[in-house]
Image (tube, rainbow over all chains, first blue to last red; front, top):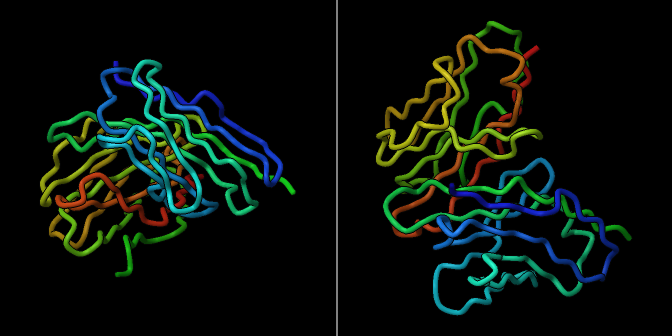
Length: 114
Length: 114
């Protein structure tokens, strides 16, 4: 079965600390992987994506994720978080082909405390 | 561009009433997605359209739900009759064939069925 699993529903962290949000996927959904972010009372926005090529992908605001095929993981990391990073983070994946359906994780709530 | 527009932003109705949610995708986008978000089930794809044609409606919960896309700039999601368990945030998203790897989300409609 196709699945994307986010291992932590909530991650509390202090400002300027490093953070890792974990995501694992089933091999049947692995071709394209995404992280979306949802700020309070807003829709989701694409944060970063892995399509092919370099296994390390970065966003403009300091987040990065590494595609690890052997561990079927696509964990999201940031070396130093800000209060403004407080949001819900969703991992998603899909296969190649014409079906545009994304398989979504349940989300991880990141709470950055001062 | 104004982004994906959804209306209303909030809807409170009584059980048994008909509810219509509206969405205007980004101009030029040829894919449109309807999602439902709840605490218990996370983000669920209900249906998606390509060039106004429904492609995958396997996520539509039951016959009480229906979606239409009469033209490239407008879509509706209708619930008739509504039930308390339909209470959720409903998102519309759109994407283009040329930038297929990113979905642009609207701000959502928060539906409460009493």
